[in-house]
Length: 76
Image 1: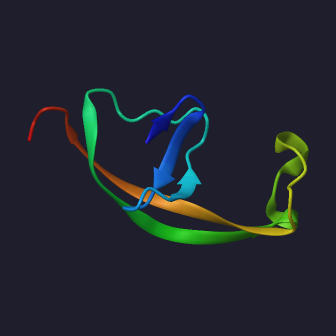
Image 2 (image 1 turned 60 degrees about the vertical axis):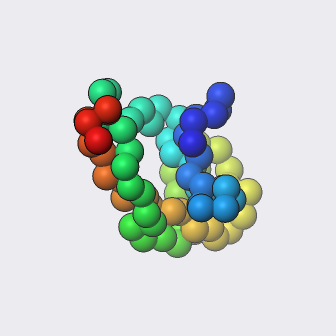
């Protein structure tokens, strides 16, 4: 789901389960025909480059790693 702030990952009920990096762009001329959670990484403050991205809001968090399947747009 595209928003003004970037792409969000939502489940079938519309609940936000993650978001993509700010510079994520789907492949040009392609459409996503399937998506699922590939895995979930558990990260903590010691594994984060927080000096570059800012102080984490918590000591430990989960990162959703999606798997997308793309096909040519309009290709059925």
